[in-house]
Structure formats: C-alpha cells, structure tokens
Amino acid sequence: MSTPETSPQETNAEAGSAKSADRAREGSGGAAPREGGNVSGSGEIPSFTITLKVRRYDPEQDSEPHWESYELTMHGTDRVLDALHKVKWEQDGRLSFRRSCAHGVCGSDAMRINGRNRLACKTLLKDLDIKKPIVVEPIKGLPVEKDLIVDMEPFFAAYREVMPFLITKGSEPTRERIQSQADRERFDDTTKCILCAACTSSCPVFWNDGQYFGPAAIVNAHRFIFDSRDVGSDLRLEILNDKEGVWRCRTTFNCSEACPRGIQVTKAIAEVKQALISRKL
Image (cartoon, rainbow, N blue to C red; front, side, top):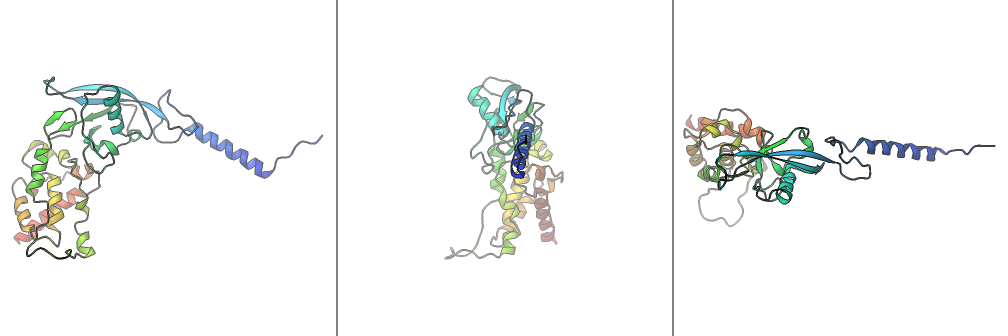
C-alpha cells in the first residue's frame, strides 16, 4: 500500500505556517509582557501592567507635594501620556497636566519621566523599565501650580526679552526677502524649537538661579542672530552679554540631551558666545 506523497509546495507552506506560529508564541518584540499579559498570536497588541508613580500637589489641599501610585493595564503602543489619560479618565479626575497635540509638536506635555526631561506624548511605555514604577513629576526650576503643571511665565519672559522676531529696516517690502540656501542652513537647527522648556528646566544653573535666561531663550536668539535678513543681531547680543546671559552656561550638555527635537543646544550657545567675542575684537 502506497503512502501519499507531499509536494515541495505543501511542505514549504506547512514549514512557513509553523514558523509563523512560533513567532506569534514568542510575542511581537518590545517590552516583554508581565505574567498574565496578552501574548496572543491573533494580531492583538500585547498588554502589560505598570505602576505609575506621580508627584501630586494641590495648593488648595496640600501643604507639601506627595506621591501617589496607580496600577494600570497598558499596551505596547501606549505612551506615558496615554497612562496619564487612563488615570485621569478612569481613576482620579483631579490629576492635572498639560497636553494639546499629543504628537510632539506643541511642546505642552514636557515633564520629568524617570528623572529625565521628556515629552509624555513621545515616550513609549515599552521603552521604559516597566518592571519598576514609572516615576512622573513636573519639570524643575519653575513654580508648580498643580500636579504636573508649572508656571511657564518666567520661561516665556526670558523668551520675549531676546526679541524672537525678525527685525528689518527700510520700507515695507513688496516681495519676499530673498535668502540663499546656505544662509538658511546657518540657523536651520534652532528653528526647530517648540518652546517645551525641556532644555531650560534640565539646566542646573537655571535651577539655582531664576534670573538666568536659560537655553531656550538663547536658542531662539540664535535663530535670529544668524539670520541674514535680520538687522537686530547687535541688540540681541548686547542683551545676552548680561551676567545672566550666555556666560552663565557651564556646558553640562543637559540641555542638548533633553531636547525632544534633537537641537544641538550647547553648540548654539557656544556660537552665540563666539559671536560676542568676535564682535568685541
């Protein structure tokens, strides 16, 4: 009695199915789900449990800030912002924080996550150590108004002081002001700032000296100081030549590491210093 033969095509198909099943059992990569997490091979996103530890402060009720922890079931595609939403919508509606676009453009949700300044909307939970509590607190150096919300007025006051707008001379133009690609590239990096304050509030000089302009203000001054169409560079350089200006920078690189847009903040500050030195010479 003959046995049925299996064609090469059928063998390959069966082997491929077996491999796909093995990969499904192994999970989809990223953070490994905790015990009891969803590791289904049906295409469903794996879930896991996290502990979110949030620094809370309500000036109407608290004399001092305190910590509160929340157990949450989250998914591999979730961000810290999603975890905060889950707490606010399902566990404690009093939790306060800022957010707007939720896509890393508006800069509203800068906060300290596990001791580092980040945007909550750009920080995936699976990229953190979910075996430990995820610690969230407000950015440093600015007065806390409530929970994760800080008073941004000192930050924006420094920003306004460096005149972050184009200064020109002569009559109103009848056409656009022409600029070469090379001239535009000179300050391209510093045009990326979204005013999230992650850089400024990561600076130890800013923490200890509330008068320091801070990295963000200097970055935005840089954007116009090196703009070939602008005639206000000397004014801005004079402002930043103050004792609380660029010379207060200690080049710790905290600001560059904190910037969610990848701006080379420390380099921009050094270039403003060099412009001041060159002007004096």
